[in-house]
Image (tube, rainbow, N blue to C red; front, top):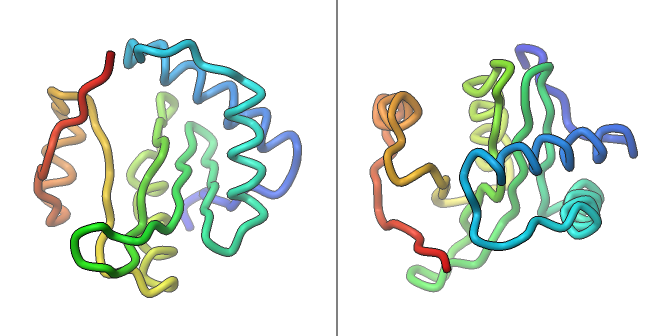
Length: 136
């Protein structure tokens, strides 16, 4: 799908870790990122039928299926999505297709508090902002 492929190797995990560290720096996350932890979680998701790890030439997306607190159904939860080199939309489309194949009733994505262009893209694709996460 438009240059997007599911992660399948240690080299793919290394690339996800590298991009995740870049994402953390861009976002200014409030915790110190741990490359070993990021890599372990990405590897776990890569090997799980309930996890999704995909790469494009310009980025990555990682997600998992979670049980919704509110409606008791399965939702696809994006854990990291970053495409500084392009291909963000193709990654999103791949994630959406995976969630549909998995029978998820909803998708949850995170963005910066001021999402700019990505917020406009998500709105055009039918997404609505539902909450804001706070960190300390």
